[in-house]
Length: 292
Figure 1 (cartoon, helix red, strand yellow):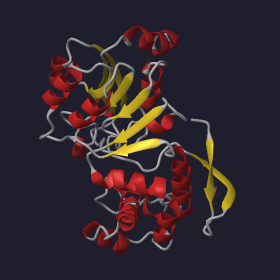
Figure 2 (figure 1 turned 60 degrees about the horizontal axis):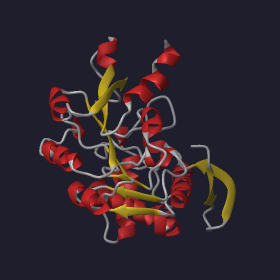
Figure 3 (figure 1 turned 120 degrees about the vertical axis):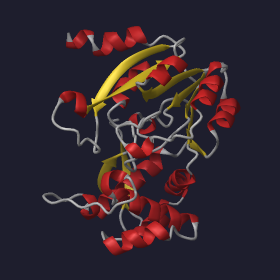
């Protein structure tokens, strides 16, 4: 994404400093490394673009605009509240976060007291996620040899929020169960990008949700009028569930949880991209022939 958005200084005035609207927060299982493979597979003739499991919205923010109607959805109300506050109340969010500097005591306090108002909850959630180890929101992030973790730039976080504020201007933010959302917005020109909880994690143990209804998602997608693109872990269960659809294989670095040695097989995580429309030829033309 090449577009740079206006941001604001502490007094709410426009600043000359600009940052790209590429992401707001890191989120466990985020698609920062996968989105370059996904973008060429999204059809050009879609009217609506719907992210069913939005998470950190890395794919949504990869382009200035995907379609005339864009919808971000996540069933985690902490995420949807944060994005709504960034969209509608960025200056209030800045004021709330102004004195939230890197502090272990403050971090631990916010873990147990999430805030009373929507703006407080958004500010404290963003603080905890951006200053935690690996973006997991559970452990205070520290580093030994660089400026990062809990000591990262506070100004950069707020500048990023203003960039995302502009990017979200026409994005509808939903907080619904995936099946209700898909049925609500399905039509022949709709496009659904689905990044559900994986069957055994995404290189991060906390993203494996054992209670997620993988079969219900498959059954829901099977009957839609529109098109879907689905990213999943490369497991026997997923391959069996979607055996009647086109799929391509990708692999990426295993991420922050990689403590399994130096062998390549331990550092890589295999994923599948699945669709109810042709993607295999486009994928291999784009990513394999050029590297042959």
